[in-house]
Amino acid sequence: MKKVVITGIGAVTAIGNTAEEYWNALAAGKCGMRTITRIPLDDHDTTVAAEVDESFEAEASKYWKKRQLNAATTTTRMGMASAGEAVADCGIDTESYDLSRVGVIYGVIDNSYEDYELEKPLNITLKKMPNELPALVSIKYGFGGPAFNLSTACASSAYALALGKQFIENGTCDMVVCGGVSNTVTHLVISGFNQLLAMSVNPDPDTAARPFTKNRDGFIMGEGGGTVIIESEESAKARGAKIYCELAGASMCSEAHNLTAPKTDGTGMARSMRMALENAGMSPDDIDYINAHGTSTGLNDLYETMAIKEVFGSRAADIPVSSVKASIGHTLAAGGALEAIACIKAMETGTVPPTIHYDEPDPELDLNYVPNKAQQHTVNAAISNSFGFGGHNATLVFRKY
Image (cartoon, rainbow, N blue to C red; front, side, top):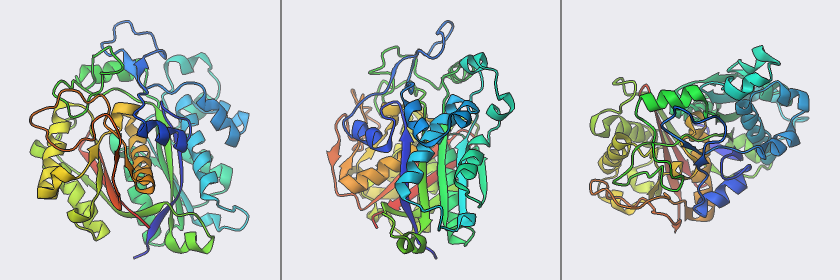
């Protein structure tokens, strides 16, 4: 089986417009949430989000021409900025590399062509194309392998990485550009999740999202884009690429249970983690950090904790478990890629990012959730969970190279 490694990363988040800015702010416990400015708040119960401000456009402009950016929504431009950074970071020589063997897969739930985007009714057809981002990345760099988007809710970009890994292992590609985007501070999205009682209605940005705490009342929406370049070990070594780590294992599975609620007691979540560890040829004893899905909802945090205890047994209490959603919000389709970057940097730096806003503990939830401040740990292997509406579960396993 071919070994799959990570050679490039790029990120746009509410706390940083590059992967390095994002990681430094994350490790420092910075909060990207604020009172929503992107849309009027009349008739909305939720008034807080982790919005990305316009400064990210300068990053996008480093890699893309103005006409390309003008043909895309804000959502897509966030993905374009992260893609440009990641491709530059991986150091590919597009003149000598066999570009027909480079794939592009992005998790895209929608392009958010609504609200303020409608004020500029240009390139409407292009802006509404959910496949515009992978198409633009493929066209810009000449990547001629499979290029497409997929939508599995909050697990979308984790699915992208899992599928990309399979493409490399089965010989379809030597490299795959994987990622996801989210720009979901719109009237329809905010009102829709409020109807499902899934989002926090706490108006205080500093306490609105409190994963694993007693008084948590839902997640807070986050915007952003994340890109991770994965590549066969053979390809990376042949071109002398910097290797961050190995993407050792991945799982994709359906709970086949409910559109919005996880399977009782976290049995579906536990299955996802076990499948990923099996795919990696690793045991629960090998894992040093768990990047939790950690949405700050009542059922997710309880069931994910139960699932971790079921999979890791007596070691569960010793493994740091944190949710970066308290810092960058729930970035939906971008979450898997952005949280993968958190795992990659945790291994590189020996720093585990905190779960901020952790105040009163929930007596039912008793793991080490890395409360409020980063912790120093040697991380030789980490897992990241992504559990989406519809029962779309994915777990990624990263290992030091």
